[in-house]
Length: 283
Image (cartoon, rainbow, N blue to C red):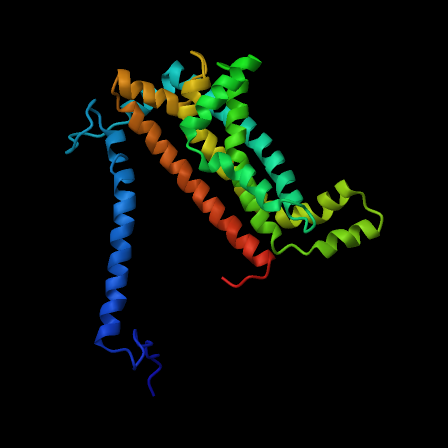
């Protein structure tokens, strides 16, 4: 008697030639779409390791020359410092405001809920250049244009819609009787939020915070309007070098940003799966 286990058939017995063609054709189309989306992104990665100051193929020799230039550049160091400072500050503000707004929108007896929701997510719909122009004139009256504070507040406004949407989606399946039970046992509103609501909705809050940080970290339009000479961020520095001095250092920064974006996507996917498990949803 043979101990070999027969491998399961790839197709069920009733699948005909048309079904097999559809099976392989669908996967071919998906592969073509992935290639169309990702090829322009990954084509720049090898050029970051080019030892010569050119943006073309074939690459004759590889080196870390431009990575070393990037790490030793004071201008890029200031851009990284400003991007992190602005991104983290704007994310904290957007996360707090967006979470409070989402919790308020989750109340059933809230009047004009649809109107309030439309107003809150409007910065995500309105073109960024229009938001930047309006913000510039408004902040000029307040005296905070051409400053880091102005950029942080503008980026926080752009990040709030992402936090509202993700936290609101998390609160859809939230059992409000848990909060009422905590209040009935004598817990204050803040204590019931910290002990009951927050542990269940924090994956949505963190997802919204990551989207808000990415929005701030990637923005160049608002920084061009509201930033002074010293308020250089990574996207603004890349834009400046593209116009004034075409250098492979831009490709180094792009490669690093691609790696960070991939890390954020993996984090978001892990959070989404954890949120689905906590809500008892089947994957």
